[in-house]
Length: 87
Image (cartoon, rainbow, N blue to C red; front, side, top):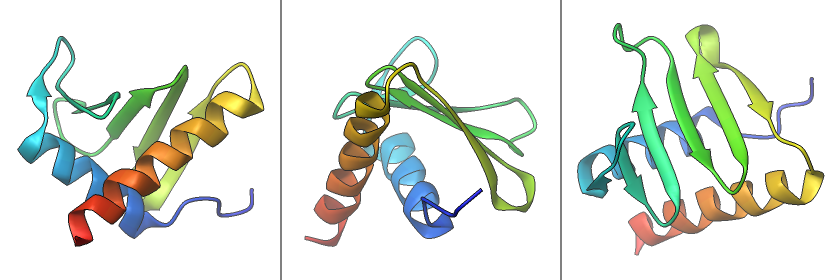
């Protein structure tokens, strides 16, 4: 699998959503992306735009989506959130 996402990006966005997002059923939500983790905290999840991203131990991750356009939109949102943190 080619490395489509940097670990830094995923963790940075996850933490920003957890700290600044609004409470949501599963966790916290910001800019249409929901962030939550499993009970032990070893696996984190980001969900939005019809995409489910599981990011786990040893920086491995797995996308679930129906259309490539959903994944592209999801990654754009992650990058947008990351850029807003740096502003």
